[in-house]
Image: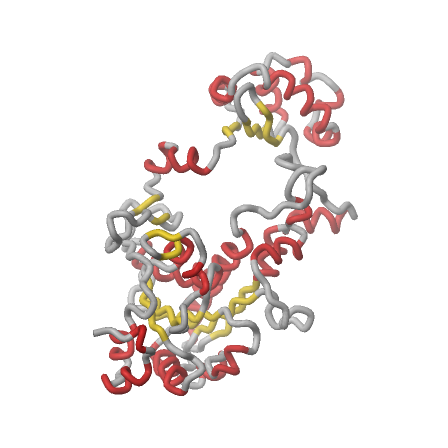
Length: 396
């Protein structure tokens, strides 16, 4: 069986928006689950409105919502809540990303849905969880990057704190949520009892900084900004070449020796201030000056070739276009066209699981695209469906 057929027959209700919750649901969808994305008829998921767009739809929304079905429901209405309760009775998993307390006020909280389905796994995704200090606070990826300390360590020492370009907090929270759901699915298969799963942005931020936190608690030293350098090894940073930048990671003494030999700087190996990794970290700035003076004399391609021949870990600092154009992207089959997309629709990134067969990816749904078929599946009549759906989301 393909890894992408892990959860055939699994039904997931997604009451989430933007990145973290939708990513968790998308992972399950890619693994074979039937994911029903429940959206507000007035505009749907906020990410639908976020630029840039392709074929009239946000590329962010398209990235996070493939392989799903969209049901447009007003959860503040009696009909909307009734539909969610009926769907929850048929579901295995619910994923929601409301602010704490909102799901309960809408009548779709954990205890309310568990009452109709005791085996339900309910995953709540939020910024700070139910903790007294943070439950009422709004939270987005950049705010948690700032709050957790990540921004204080990102960038060069003489520049303002920087946000990591990738939404690391959102993405890692989505992955933790998916992992928690998978663990709960294994338990419910043994016990028949459902479970509440919580995934928060702030916990994910702290987890990303695990070894920095441990080091700070052990030494009392608060880490600062090192640019591309690493606090645990040297040289382990980007150097300017004659025509670009090259990242070099010489993580042990043998690699450092090969690096120096390749750069015709063998005299550095015997120096007391560079003899061990601990010494090189302590004297990082002086070591950088010695290596930089040599690396600027050649091109990135020349040095990369020589270092790779010497088995010294190195990589060019590429922009995104260069990275996507690299043969590895094609060799790894990372970009896959959606089966039902238009000819101009951008391809999608597969999950990074090793599988010989290309994945089956369906484009992200339009708002309310599957409303009628989903409501029919749980027994609503045509008249009830007509009353339930906003005019803009009705289907023929």
